[in-house]
Structures are given as C-alpha cells and as structure tokens.
Image (cartoon, rainbow, N blue to C red; front, top):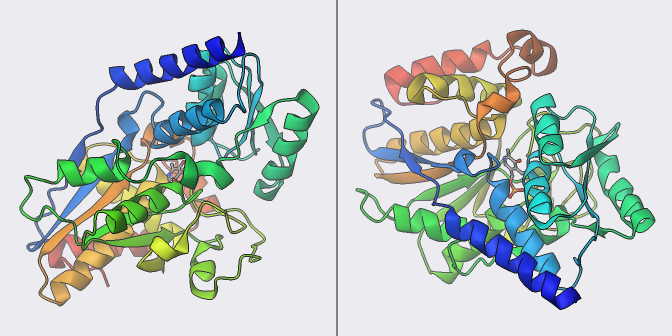
Length: 353
Ligand SMILES: Cc1ncc(COP(=O)(O)O)c(C=O)c1O
C-alpha cells in the first residue's frame, strides 16, 4: 500500500516537472559595460515564485526515495520563507500536512502564500531557533523534518539532469561569450552554489564561482577560516541568504572567490535593476547583481572580455511592504543613498568603485 502511494507521489512530482518550462536567462542591456555581458537567470517565474521551487521538488523526491515520506507524513521545515512556500505547494500536491518554522520577521506576503497552499506557519523570535524547533515539532507529530540546510546540497543531482547549472550553460550557447567567466551566487542553504560549483568542475569548465554574502552572516568568515563553529548574533537582513551559523550545505571547496556585500548596496541595486528591466526583484538578487557589477568592473580594468551570469532569485512583489517601502528601508537597512550614487556613477563610467 505504502509503495503504491509513494509511486503515485513520485509520479505527481514528475508530471508537475513535465508541465514546466525552463526559466529565462535575461541579458541585461547595460550600455556603460562595453566588454562584459551580464545575464540574470530569472528564477522568479517558477510556479511558486523563486529558485526554491527546484529545491523543494528535489527534497520531496529525496525524502520519498529514502523512505522518509509516506502517506500522511506531516512535513516540517525550517525556512526564512521561500523554501516553505515551494514546499507547501508540493505538500498540497501530495496531500500532506505542512508546517513552516520561520522567524517572526518573515515577509507577510510569504506567510500568506504558505497559507494559500494550505501550509501552517509556526513562528520563533530569532532565526537561530528554527532548527531545534523544527526537530521538536517533527518528533512531537511523528513527522519528517525536511532540513533544507543539511540536505540541499545532496538532494540535487549536480552532474546535470536539467539542474540550474546545466540549464545556464545550455542557455548561454549562442551568446558572444558562451562560457561565463564568472557565475555569482549568494548562499542561503548553500545548495545552489554547491550545485553550480560541482557542475563546473565535473564539466571541466573554466568558469569561476563567486559567492556573495550579506552582512550578519558567517559564510564569508567561514570561507576564509574554515571554522565550522562560527556563529553570529543577529540574523541576516537580506531575506533568503546569509546565515547565523555555518550550514552543512555550504561547500566552500567549490567556491573560487567570496565577497561581502553591504546590505545597503543590495537594496540600492534592486532599485537600479528596476530602472533597467522594469521589474522588481527580491533583495538577494541585489546582492548577486552588485557582486556581478564589481566583477565586471575588475574585468574591464584588466582589459578582459567575457560574460557573467547571476540569479534573479525571486520577484519583488513579495517585498512591497519591506524592501520597497522607503521608511522600512531607512529603519531596517539604513541610508542607501551612497550606493544609489555609486550606481548612478556606474551608469556613466562603467566602474563601480
Ligand atoms: C530569495 C532567495 N535567494 C537566495 C537563496 C539562496 O539559495 P540557496 O539556499 O540555494 O543557497 C534563497 C534561499 O532560501 C532565497 O530564498
């Protein structure tokens, strides 16, 4: 009986995948960059609005194939929001109860979306409490704790099989510089950067992976010190990325270069991007893109031509009352005018100093 249900569950996820199209790779039109092309892989167009749609699909398949998820198994996840939205979608597809354990500061729109898909939100005061609380709930309900922070890197098939890295390299094939000089990604679990970094190595590409970390996150320091016990007091203010502890899915060995991006720069960059493409993106896209623009400047300084690919992780509509609210930004992020000025100058000079 159980195996029939599991087979049907896998069928449903595979059929959902079969119905979906790949996400677009947007080429940015940036006149001041004369020798470097920048591309955004637009992950906001998944049915649940973010790159986490891929991860949720992989985590459910991993749990089903490992015998961890059966008929009626409650699914519990610790999440800053996007993963929970996507997992709630798949839980509903399979008819399973879903509970997201999240910081109480999570964007209202994400909470509404989780509830829209029939999920329940369980709040904690501080982002570092989500892990223990998720495990506690799973034990209490005889449920399965998905634990994206541990399993993201291994649930995805990094060798190919239509993963995000495979898709980027295929979509770049007809571009002037088809092999990106850099791919830039900001880690949350670290799963996406692990998939991209491993794929690059496996395919023996020359592309380098740059990881970008926001303030209030330990990944950058861990990359340099390799001390897995690092923690930081405050949670990241850039939703979806940056963590207060070293997550098991962040694999530093596949990262070639790492930089820290100020939160004010990330927010200024999503406003700059809106002017460029007429669309709002989430704050982690700002972190990614600011890192990409810095690398473009360095490439132009070194008379290097090439391409840089980064991710539009989710759309900005989820954040109208936070990152797109000037008062909220001033109160929570601070003054971003210095970076707005830098980006205005960049438009004229092609240099981000
Ligand atoms: C909006 C957003 N951007 C980026 C990331 C980071 O992706 P990953 O968890 O694969 O490192 C996340 C992860 O939650 C996210 O929600």
